Image (cartoon, rainbow over all chains, first blue to last red; front, top):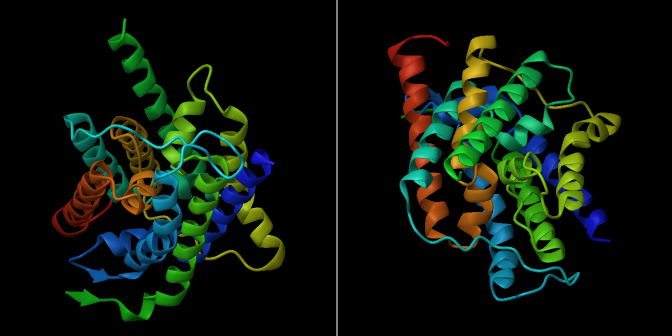
Length: 139
Length: 146
């Protein structure tokens, strides 16, 4: 059952990205282009998503188990450290170059565009580089 | 500020956002997990990831969403602006940045803000800020894409 709900959640997430326009890098870049012809649509994606998710996530914060009896695994870190800020700034630079973030990168992978494949391979390489640096740091 | 009303899609973006919120809600309420895409992918890249089955199935759903969509309707426009070098640079930065920053647009921007996490609010402000600056520099100061 938990596998089925995970699959359905992923599917809905993908439909949402496609419907919202988030899977179109040009539209994302038009949102990030405040000084050009600005397309504010993606602000409404955030409004719609947070508007729906805020109730269930508030509920989740008060539970130790999910409805299917799984442990509730919410992040516990609290500190605003340089890794959070530096990493997020780097992510934003990459997002601003191509207009693609990780969710849409997965959702457009099978649409037959070479750009989607190149971006995904580079993103996986970046993540593996992080893992390698972390492993070295912890030894 | 010059708003591009012609390409402004308030209703489909709001509805798409609501679907994303519904998906994130289902994943946390049923599975007890945060629908953060960079975190899901990143943890599957590490050996011995717990909950690998659920995480993979979430990503599988996301992966085949356009194929299922394509059976019933035409896919929305997907238009790229960058060439190979730009895509590689962007991909590497997104990969490293989201892992160091512990999340991306979904994990911090949607789920984190929805659970009122100060860390996620700061992270979202940071990547929006550097995204705005990057587009400004590339489009208006350098006048083109790398």
